[in-house]
Length: 168
Image 1: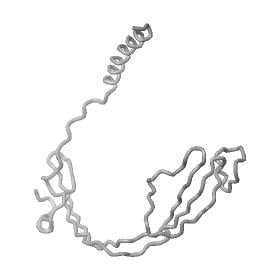
Image 2: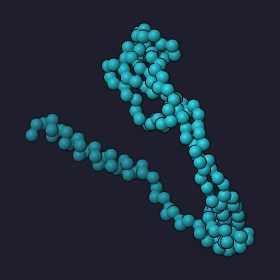
Image 3: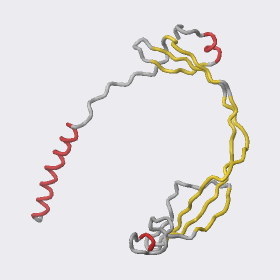
Image 4: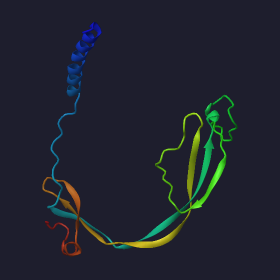
């Protein structure tokens, strides 16, 4: 075995236990176990949300595709003309209006060396396509014996028959 290999192995056997000891000493203290959700207790408050119709829409987008040139990214070298002042030039090819929602999470298609294209999309309008019914919600705020409180959804019968300070 070469001397450098022995040195690396010795160094690794010293570093790993030391790092483990440091990490364990800096670890967060054990957190107390979480208590279960509040389901039973005294009713301290009531609230209800009436049912409502939510409109649905189809959005229309206008997208522009900009060709980015690699010479334009050399800031301060005068590589291409830039109207924005950020060292980027491009031809504003308009993609027109479309109903298809653009995938804004998709990475840009830039390639090293020759630049790439960049799509900029904005919403130009929307058309109402229908509606969705959101049913009514009834909730009680419950306080447990240990003082914790939480909102609990109940049906309309339980909501109407329950008064403040009742025990559920």
